[in-house]
Image (cartoon, rainbow, N blue to C red; front, side):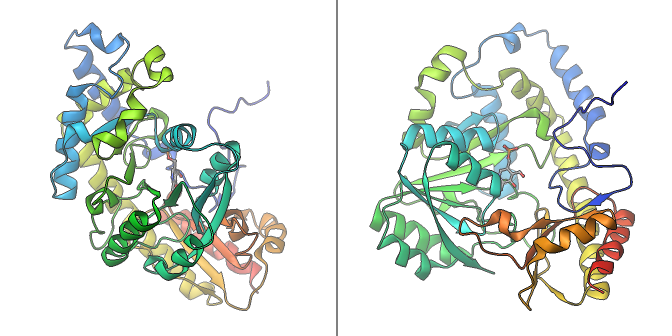
Length: 376
Ligand SMILES: Cc1ncc(COP(=O)(O)O)c(C=O)c1O
């Protein structure tokens, strides 16, 4: 009988594919989810099976706000949260509510390639703007704002995918000032905000908002499990209003109320905090091991050690187009994502995105050794 594929990606036997930006199924918290589900079911509340409140249940938003307040060391008001089915869904809804085909959005160069695909679905014109180790280069963004009138700027301000960089506090303030001057929304994709392995990053973008223009998007995909399809938008209530009052939620009720009720128990029982600490310790060890191995075995690659997130963004400074290398890496059963995938301008051809999230240390080291053979 043919093997049935049960998840979005499948890795050929014996491969080590650094292209994969997901947690490995082996570390997904099945036992903890079972415990949380039992805790919730034992409460005998049939409301968890009912259509949910459009904004997300007040109970869950309160529990989530307490968890986030502790993580951010800043107050989070439950009325400033809207429960989503993850960041991908939130991005799609933002496009539906705020844009029409032909409108312009500005993205970072590089940017998360699957967000680019959501913007393409909505037939948006995408303009790229460069980043450096401190995130969006403000002067370059302003140059583009003099030529284009974007509906929003899409940024991944913390532990960027693919670049690993974090937008500095100073630039966050400047970005908000630009949004006021040129009247656009800031869509901050903060999927890696809580995955810090060294220093704490600056606070989420919403804390820099001075004129109700920032949507901070969070998700349980990288801190608990992607299959839950659960996340949140953190913003001023006036910005959340159009998300709550819309035909989709009028008809279907709030997003994922049943999953929210179980994740409520995950947080209440302290499981989320404990699991997040486990993830941070696990990924911290992996990033140190992988960066060390890359430096030792592939000196031709230059990169900055990421302080969080999932990715090492590495560059071949001699300008080699890495797509050609993919044929060779195949022979050695190792893979990576070529930089061009993250470009809205058909560039970044000499960059490789390497993820350290999917494999344990032993496989990471083995994979780097295989990759090094391509550079000989
Ligand atoms: C930058 C970024 N945004 C969004 C997502 C997807 O988030 P979600 O699973 O919440 O839709 C990912 C997943 O890789 C990501 O890297």
